[in-house]
Length: 196
Image: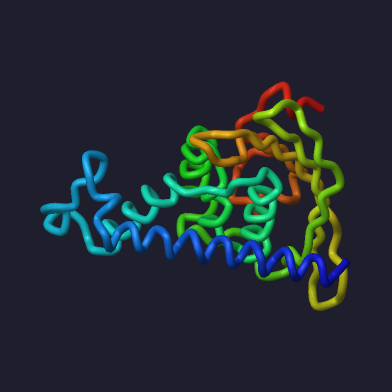
């Protein structure tokens, strides 16, 4: 089981790395510079880091994963790596908007979680196809500290198609998982799909 978790973590990291490389290639070639993004003159109005951040966020919004399970894997690996950008990358537009607002308060540097206990693994307990464009996943997320296992938390994720990619539209978590996600409420993008 541990080997599978490590393999899935490495595979998600490779997917995220490929997405970043794609973004950088698009930026380099000018594909993402168009009617939505005008970078001319922006250096006089913002720092190079603000411009870079804006461009990267716009680019991430144009890439995604092609399987619903991959959205769950990238999100869960974002928890494990304390990386809000990874979590953000597999969310729908609406959930991203809510997430950015929550991160401004909970994790303005986009580093989520705490140093101890940390997320050390996750298990998909249930994957249920709702229809051709939506799935519901139930996860158990494990934490650990230097003293050993520190407890498990549950999460439900509703994954849907948006712009040709699979993205997380809604999630519901145990309250103890909030610091690890960066959300400020246990139900984000709530809907009937996640009704208790």
